[in-house]
Every structure is written in C-alpha cells, then in structure tokens.
Image (cartoon, rainbow, N blue to C red; front, top):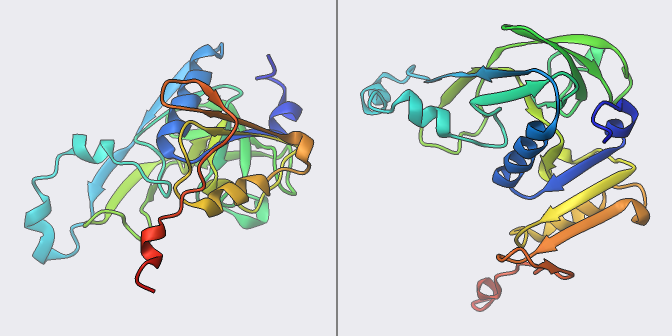
Length: 226
C-alpha cells in the first residue's frame, strides 16, 4: 500500500539470512507492484590474465556464469520498476554520498544508466546517475576470478542481514524460514532496529507453520577434543 511513499521506504526494511530468500521476496514484491518494468542482464566473463589456467576455464559457459550468485556481486538479471528501492554494493563517489550501503529510489531507467534519488545518509533527495561497471569480488568464492559487468546495485525491499550492518531503521521485519547458521547474524539483525517495538520476526517450519522459537545453531562437536 505504501510502495510509492519514500518516507515509508526510508524507515523500514525486511532482513533475511540467505541470498535465495532475499531474491524470492524481492521478486514477489516486484510482481505485485504496478508500473512498467525493465530488465538488465549482465555480461559475465572469466579473467584470463593467468595464461596457465586459461585453457582450463575456456569450457565454462556464459550460462553457468550467469547462474552464479554471491553477496559481493549483483545478480545476472536485475528487474526494476520506477519507485523500486535499491542499495549500492560498491563505492562510487563518497563526496556525493554514493557509498557501499547507500539506499536509493529508482526514478528513471534507460539502457546504460539508472537515475535514482538517495534516501539514506547525508545526501537525502539528491538525484544521481548510476552506470554499468565491471565488478568482481575481492575474495572469489570460486576457483576462478569472474568479472560481471552490471549495475552495482541490489533491489532492497529485502536484504541479507550482513549487507545491512552499520545501519539502523525505525522498523525491521526479520524473516527466518529456517535457522540462521551463524548465531552472530541473529544478534546483528536485532541491533539494526531503533527500538524493541519496531522489530517483527516471522519464523516458520518446513511446512510453513508459524513458530515462536528458532534454533541458535552451535556444533558442540567442535568442543569435544578441546
């Protein structure tokens, strides 16, 4: 009901523990929003500067590269509509407030640039333009270095808990369809909200039945030989 209300979007967010859950809910929200949609597809390739390994990786297909996801890179496909909240995942211009973690609202979309308005930090309401750029994680989770040319953004109706570290909001919804693997993530999520009344938690089991507890995952086996 408030998807066009910037003040509403500035003060609220949903947090989840995995990229898969984040993508699932962001897709759902985009599907129920009105307005014209634009899809941006990335150009993915492997850094072949190491000639000794280049022959090994030539067999990797673009389709496989497109399927790869990590919190350090935007997705291969980004769906946007006017009014969609997004978050930068790369420092672009710190003087203008375009830093990793800055939240914005999409105002216009063309093929090679996105116009957006800042809704967090010191430069709120400033209109900026975001270009496509080559991106690669500093520490690759794969045995090769992939470069993805894409807009350095993620849709931010829902974000991973780790991605939202260092920021606080008036209201946060914490969605836990399964236990969080790292217990520190749970504490980080609780610290992202300004007050207890602003925190809502949704927990359910594998069958979708609501729960009021979640497991604090600890592998006791690691202490057996101490």
